[in-house]
Image (tube, rainbow, N blue to C red; front, side, top):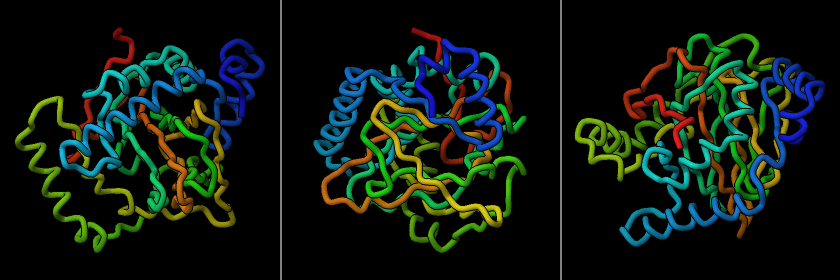
Length: 270
């Protein structure tokens, strides 16, 4: 764990952090977003929930690709400090291929153990990261991430697919496919969230998961092959609002996906 200013301004601290990232598969940067910026993110998440509720939709759904539909979310993934940090990890200019906005309300189940590259299929596999941005204080009780340190070194691992789970989400899958076939335009984000508990990656033997507690405004940068999951939110009144953004180094190949339809997004545009 290192502050964003130390990471960007102190070469020795940055080299140590990058060495830890290469060894562990993830890196936590603190204080990347200021308290005022975190407050603005809270306002964006709240407005999205209010708008959806007013339209008769589930207010706290997981939303894919909101960076393309909401200026507030676009400003988060284009934050200059975030872009500089991801550039430092990937070693060059970057672009965004996917985002997912999450509310993590009390009672939410969390994600199963998985590798993001199981879905993204980035090549080379070292040229993709996920930046997991904490909007609230995050700990194990309200649904923090947990990572298997070093699980990224062997690439994609054996993964069990829960087909029965997909059957229970068949209506959502049909909704996603229809959305792709008959797009309504950029004002309609994908809210079906069908893969949360579909893939179960086999963790390495003898490695225990490490909970990733984070303060608001912190960012966890994870290798695309890191095995990670999230705990259920067991609290009665604490949300775990967050945004996960998948960045690639410019020129990296990736899978668009039949439901997600990933496309490059310019993080340098104003």
